[in-house]
Image (cartoon, rainbow, N blue to C red; front, side, top):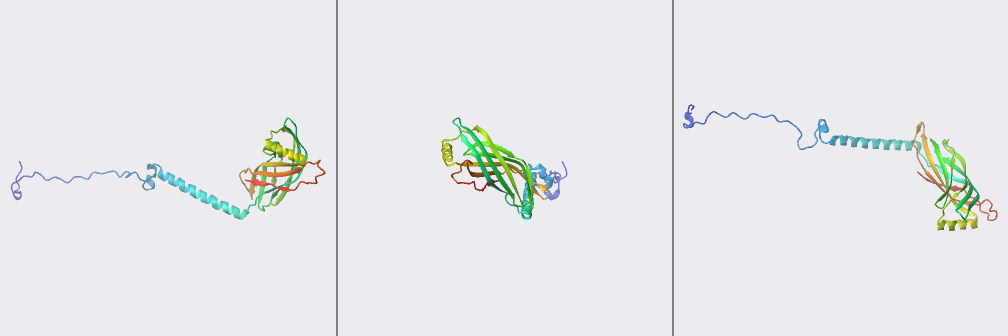
Length: 234
């Protein structure tokens, strides 16, 4: 046994215990949260989603500001459609529900804008009686310049099976007696707008024209077709 230490009353306590050595610990993730930018890719993508979200907000703001600037510069006005003339020479339904029809229509299309041109890539005209379509025609495509009025004409003629409801048959009987027919013309368009040197993507507006067209053989009623404004739905 080792020497006794007299100042400790003869007790032997053994050699002194050295202090514990400090063990190194890895400074890894704590609590599962996101740290600085260098740790973003290790915390479940939360920082990536935040960056994407901020980019989307920035893009939305930039697009909104650009659209406002374009509107302030060009001040776009709605295109106006009118049916200026309509001539109906035949509109009769036989007992087998075959409709024979012959209708000529003239439209005016007004572009009131000073800095916007319009490409009409497709113009399809459809004739309806009630909810039943009876004819289709196409108008040649064209470009319409600034502050321009263009006149286009089309013809709906032929025959086809038309199945009218009871209400539509009653309406037709009334129209036959009055010789004034309630016909609806619908236009299906594909248009692009030109802002200076920039062309927009394609729009598909729908045009509806509610018409009252006298049969041309009706010479006693005195009713004449009236210029009709069409409803435009973009």
